[in-house]
Length: 422
Ligand code: LLP
Image 1 (cartoon, rainbow, N blue to C red):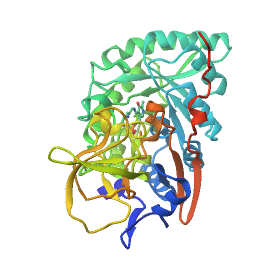
Image 2 (spheres, rainbow, N blue to C red):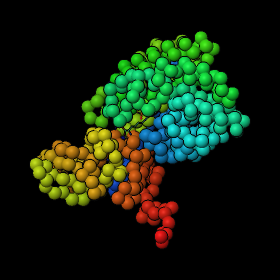
Image 3 (cartoon, rainbow, N blue to C red):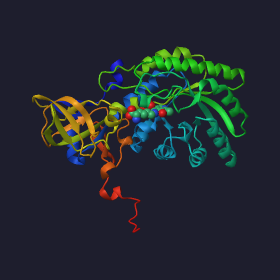
């Protein structure tokens, strides 16, 4: 069962890597390299893994748009019943464009601007996950101006260590996120007193790529104590939003399946009568996507080889930014001697690598390799650094394939710029 979320539909058939029922090579022939490829079946399977696991209680899955915000992916998840967890006006724009109903959208983030609050209120989102007193007052003010009421949850920082990479850990006292749990009660009292605010929820999110259920259990218990205290003050919480964060297998991690998470959480929640909200991102889309890249050159280095490919840190930033590990496999399996290599991109930075000191079969110019588990925080964190057009994205469904984002052109690179003589 544990393996479930690392299962996907990228596999070898006679030594040729397939995305569902199509050879990856064919997709590259048609769309070029580098290319992000997503598997429809994997996305559906992962979404359902969550939805089915929490079936026995009222729940809403709000897919975390930041993990991968492609419109077609949002549309697919929306059609399966997903809502959205958003963190900006731009994500709200995307989610609603893709057909996700505003009544299923929750909005987090420490720095919502007045314009963004205005936009979200006009759209009629389910709730704001509020991160500070000043933000709360700002939402009240904007709602008043629009003659609307704003539904809110307070994002509580439960001070739980999720034991993940420090950059993606968010639920400890020293982090910028949420309101310290000791101060929650007074913030809720304030929220209740504000004229244009409806207090409907509690929110927490403690980090990402969490590979054990225990931090979720510990954080939930803390939040439930708060919910009881709130009841005494006649503040009745309808939505319990426990954030995202369940990890995936990149290398040898063994993250729990959503079913296991549910098994641990449901007994604690059974009588709560609240609607549970989950905000998974990585565990839905991470293993549903790969980045395929072509070898340009190889050259000897000190005690290793450099394999220079046409994808770079601007296309997949995770190795550079977090030292993240992504499995790298050949698109065509060949029997060759193994080498130790740094797989690097063309960008002018020493930090531009997809893998370091990796054992791989020797590669030749022109050959294709696939960077696995690249569906989450891959394209969505990509940039145009070194004036590199961003790559195309393709969705595969069985034997069918669909271009879901065109490769950028040089023209796209300068869109909005002005050639001003100063
Ligand atoms: N909800 C909130 C409020 C979040 O801040 C996040 C992620 C999620 C949900 C989704 O978490 P997930 O299920 O994907 O773990 N760029 C980093 C990950 C940053 C996560 C930020 N927040 C990476 O590539 O590892």
